[in-house]
Image (cartoon, rainbow, N blue to C red; front, side, top):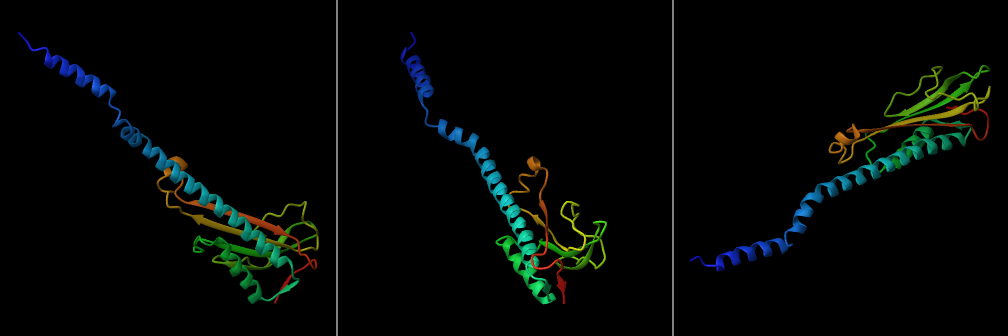
Length: 191
């Protein structure tokens, strides 16, 4: 004759195992953890990308606005302003920041050419060369100079390589432009 107690023990063990939920949380956490890490990485990456985009807009608009406020600049004054505007990108590195400032002449046919230019970590626009910014004919006025600013920046975030399969890029590239009319006179000179 067989002992009925082992069958009861097996059945009760199976019932206890089916009711035991102590490991379910750990298994759920292991399954959800990679998704949480990916969301955190995406949030950090997206936040830094938005911050740099905003800072780049501030750089070009601040530089253009400041240069437009006087009718005559010395090279050292204008270079100091350019260098000062680079601090807007902080806490990000200025290593990848490039800026071109050009004051362009507008001809009677509304074509534009550089009168004078300066640059930060880039080649300065040469006099009589084409404007570094395409000037819309709606804002061009014959005989009135325009201040143009072009800035570019390459950002590599801590997670950009990790997110490359999703985003398709490992470095984010920003390029911003700005055009401003002189505020005091129709021309701005550089001494």
